[in-house]
Image (cartoon, rainbow, N blue to C red; front, side):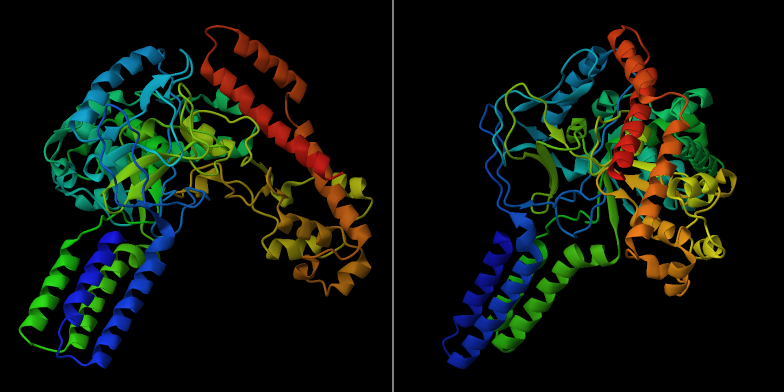
Amino acid sequence: HDNLTTILMTMVSVQTSRAERSSMRKRNLSLKCEVLLVIIQSLIAADIQLSDAFLSNDISLTRLSSRLVSTPAISKTHDVAIRRVSLLEAVKTGSAETSTSSRLKRTFAFTDWAKENDIKYAGIQVSSGDQNSGLGLYATQTLSPQSIVIQVPTKLTLSVESPSDYNKVMEQGLFASNPKAYRNAPWWAALSIQLNYFDKVNSINERAGGVSMKPWMESLPRVYDTPFHWSDSALAELQYRPMVEAVTLQKRLWKIQYDSLASSGSVFGSLITYEDFVWGCETARSRAFSGAYSGSAFNPIPYATVAALVAVYLGLGLGTVEQAANGAALVVCGSILKDFVFPKLLKVQKYVICPLIDMANHVGVGASGNVAFEYFADGFSLSVLEPGVSQGSEMFIQYGPRNNDQLLQYYGFVETNNVHDVYILPPLREWDIAALEEACGRKVGPGRLEKLDRAGLLGRSSDIDSSISGNTEAANDIGGVVLTRASGIDPAVIQALRALVSSDQEWEDAGEAIGNFAAEVSPENERAARLAVRRAMELELESKPTNMDEDKGLLKVLESRNGVDVEEILTVRYRLEKKKLLQEAIGNMR
């Protein structure tokens, strides 16, 4: 913003210094420039704040001119064109490596590599809280709010834009005979290719000026303890069908994607195995930031060129001041549209894996750090949020509003009392209608189910074999009933049940239209609908092979033993959290 303002004010000075111009023309020119400044400020100023000084210690860090600020993440959610792209939903996964200390040793070469390649960091270090906690970023001194603790040049990151982005070096090296197979790959597969290229094929990053990426690659986890690697019997122990189906789809989709790449007539399949590809996909899914901003950095050349051309244009008397101002305004506005507006309109999504910042761990509430794309500095940064971080404490970021389905499937951990957690009940068509009728004291009249089915409110039967989509998270492809800790039961379900348990008179008064049940129709109908929902949730909870008390006891035993497999603890912790959510929802329906 400061740079743009300086350039524009210089233009004003040059243009208005011509004494022979009339005062009216000068006022018009000044007005145009002021309007242009207002336009720029309205596009940028709301999303930019001046950066605070870097932490003062033995590492000399350069002050940034400005920082892009994010709004709270809404999931990888993520939408304003220029911002800290909550961006950037950063991510990191739990690892099944047997020794945290062995991986920590591998990070020593990585941090040396970071210093050598202009990754600036101060006040933090890669460490672990204890032998079993995994690696994270810990404060070596008290960190003040708004301090920037890490700055990484864009050239050292791995990134891909969706849609239609690819790395020409990797395309020529791995997919020269069939480039479309690579160009059409989803973002997580494209990042897997980049990771494996630097890890297994050629560690030299030509885009970064010939930097070897080997130290960074060697610091990454080599194995992940996620449900992708669990047996069918282990998945069944989760006692949650949506997760089992999501993992099944994930496995199938990743295998199809690999086979497509390997059979494309390229050398990809001979250099990178399916296991390598899966490692890259898991690393990408667990460590990438994402956001709607395209990530192109500030380029001062067009603005400086415009200022010079205006001076020459006016100096040689080739035209009027107004003409020069109009031309300059057109160029400046075009650059703003290119950097800030078009990426959002075209729904460009950028995915970035950023060295060192990707070591930050997640917390659902109370994050102490935030990630930003630095527009004018052409890099990414990690800064401190209120109220700061005390010495020795871990610095957490928030990946976004992740539920435990997402956290377990891609990151390998479960968050206790996760405020973003969800429970997906079976679709309405699978509910026990007779049990609901008994619970609410009403009978389901004729025509109700048919109308709900036509309205798409009954969901559909699960059919994994016929559903291969890019959405492999534990989502709601079958139209199940969504229950969230934050807002409770889906309002559309309450609407459907109002219609389902309506009396003949209520059904007739509503014109037999489902849409007329969007609001409460009568206290009696509302009570019957809520009783039906509560009974459905009770039946779901009762269907579990174990109850909450049994899970609590088992979890306590497992956590007290040494050498217990992480998979066992995660399984019990996950299903206990799901049952707690159901129990809370049942209580809220009383």
